[in-house]
Image (tube, rainbow, N blue to C red; front, side, top):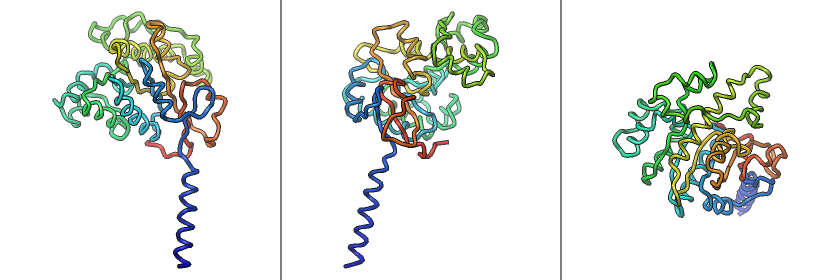
Length: 283
């Protein structure tokens, strides 16, 4: 009996400690803790939701799928992602229709190394629920061309190649704080062309999002947080063309202490997922 009581005590103690060690918290832009359901209600009322991620964080990948499932209960959805490039749209469509299998998709499309663990669940959810999934990003080779030679190198592309990006000439605002921060992070080793390359991605993702938005349909976009933080990047392009669009942003950050949102993260997004910095990475 004594051993049973001790075992029960240790089990309850361990359960209590685990319950106190939560892997994540959600805050609003002002640093106030938010319940998942409240965040979901706000997303449901929007036209466009950006689910910004840290590419190697398992918590945000899990939450992206859960949010998508829950939003699909009350809203018609269109999905889109940075992780699929526009010239791979045909392959994505064929996979969604069941015309090709996963192995063929891997051959025909340039899938990210962490596709199987982090993005296949989203694409397969779209397939199982008959949802459109839009490959929104500019093919990387063209962004690399801009990095090496500026926007003007795009002028010589064929009409077919230009169809895989935002219309030329692309708008560009180098004074956006997130773009200026790119150069700061490079410690003087970056160039204006590097920021232009980033802008080609943001402009193109905005272009394909707007092309596939419909009345009474909620568009969910998955992208690296940097592309939508502070409602700049992609969001700047969206608002420039369609200022009335109701946008909700979501970002992901790491902290050691989850009790309070660090001041540096306030305002990054409408909703901020704070993940324990000791969480394992997917790569």
